[in-house]
Length: 207
Image (cartoon, rainbow, N blue to C red):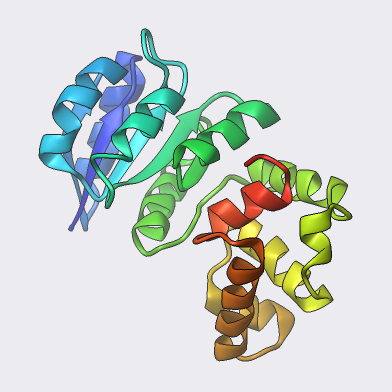
C-alpha cells in the first residue's frame, strides 16, 4: 500500500485526487492539505511515501515547501502537480528536491502510474516536461561538465533525464543492465553528484 498526501489549494482538484487515490487498489490517501504552511506543520508527522505538491499555493509556494520538507521527510518522494510548463519552474522544483513533475491535465491512470514509478525509484515526468529537460540538456551539451563524460555516458545521462529506469535504458541502448549501473556510477563520480536529479541539474547548469 502506497501512502499519498495531497497538497492542493483548489478544492475540486484536491478532492478529485483523493477520490482517485482512495478508490484505486494499492493506494491510500493519508491526508490532504490546502496550503503549504499546513503541510509544513503536519506532513512530517505522517511522512508518506509520496506527496503530490501543487506549485502555485497561497502563501508559501510548493517549491519552497518541498525544499523545507525534504529536510524532515527524507524518505518522502515529491511529485509537482502544476499547470506550469516554464523551464524555471521545472528546474527550481527539481533543485528543491522533487522527484517528478506532472501537468494537472495528466490523465488519472498516468497519475497513478507516476506515483508507483516514483515510489519504485523512478522520476516521472509528462512527455512535455521531459522534452524541455532534454532540450535544455542538448543546448548545454558542450559545457565542461559534459566533456568529462564519454559518448555512452552522455547517452545514458540523457536517458536518465527522461526518467527511464536502468532496465529500460539497457533495452533502449541494447546493453546489459550491469553495464548501465556501472556507467551510472561513473557519471555520478565524474560529476560529483549522488543522484540522477543532481546529475541532470549539474549538466544543464542548474546547480
